[in-house]
Structures are given as structure tokens and as C-alpha cells.
Amino acid sequence: MSKEIYITNLDKEKLQKLIRTEKEFHPGNKEHLDDLNYELERAIVTKPEEVPADVITMHSQVVLKELGDEEDLIYTLVYPDEADVTENKISVLAPIGTAILGYRVGDILDWKIPSGTLQLKVEKILFQPESNGNFEL
Image (cartoon, rainbow, N blue to C red; front, top):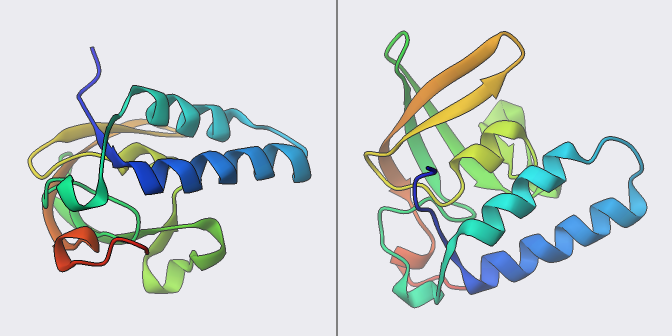
């Protein structure tokens, strides 16, 4: 059974629109879009002002710990047009972006990579827009 995840109704609407646009205008493998859609459909949907402060939402900056080697990874979860690997801004359409969306501090999740699966623990939320009163990012 999958761990419960949370998403704001505004993020869900924006992400569903993104999925529709990507499917319509960008041909090719859409497995990553199906993965994101699955996560959106299983998520507990909340109002932005009611999402718990320890949940990874869009534009959250998070610290993840790779359980295999205890390395800390810091990422900001963004929309594809904002992604910039040099600034550790990862797209929600990237496998790790889809994997972390909606998880809470303390949760452990599996991230599929070509050589297998890594286990990541959500260590800390450094920034979450909603907890800072920004409900429109």
C-alpha cells in the first residue's frame, strides 16, 4: 500500500493542465505523465491554507537523505519551465520530482533509477510557499 500524500487543490489543477498540454503538444513516451497523474489521483486534496507545513508542495525546497549512503540532497520542486539543474530546481515531470510531490517530513520513498531503486527520506522542508502565506506560486 502506498503512503498517503497531500496536494493543494491549486497545485492539482495546474498539474492536470500541464499533463493535458504535454500529452497534446509533445509526442513521445508519456509514462512520466501517467505516473504524475496517478499521484494526483491518489493524493489527499486540501486547500492551500490547510496543507500541513511539512508537506512537499510545488516550489518547496526540501532536504532528502539517500538511505544507501546517507548523502543529503537539496532540491526545489518546480514546473518544467523553471527547472534548472545548476540551481537544484527539479521539474515535477522528472522522476524524482514526481516521486517527492506530496510527501511529508519523515516519509521514506522509493525513487526508480536505471540501475534499480533508491530509498530517500524526507529530512526537512527548508521552504514551503503555503506555510509562508503564498498560496498562488
